[in-house]
Length: 172
Image (tube, rainbow, N blue to C red; front, side, top):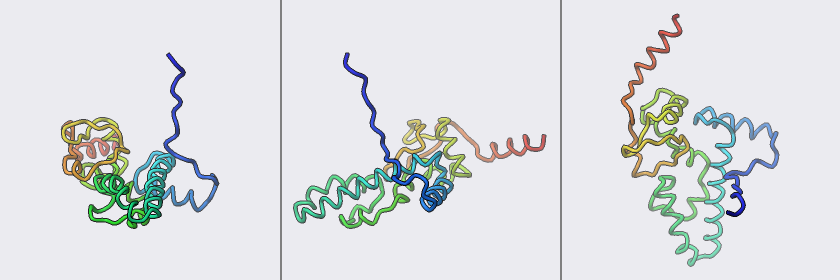
């Protein structure tokens, strides 16, 4: 049977946990992107750190590194984080916002399927959003550039009707 699997964290907590400036930046990002907690930022930062680390490693190898970097470049281009014709140096200039912009929650809000970023998260977790007809209930799902045009409602949903219910309940 074997021992139970030991899961590894997908994030790394900051070295200085109570840094006021970092906390202010994270709070701003949480408000802007409708994130649940700082852990979601840390997971995204870890993905960014991995991409940058690989890019620096490939840059140090010179000409041979550019050939080895092709899968990394294709992956980031497929996700829509960088342009398909980007160079390896462009990966070093990426920020956490580039990754957060590719989350399903952010794209649902930007496409106008939800009135607020928090409502976008709620619609996703409650199963109202689909990609290519397949229900997706993970707000942090990284949407590829080709899947982006297929984001739609899974169940029929009228945003204006939900607004009317809230107004009715408030008047009671």
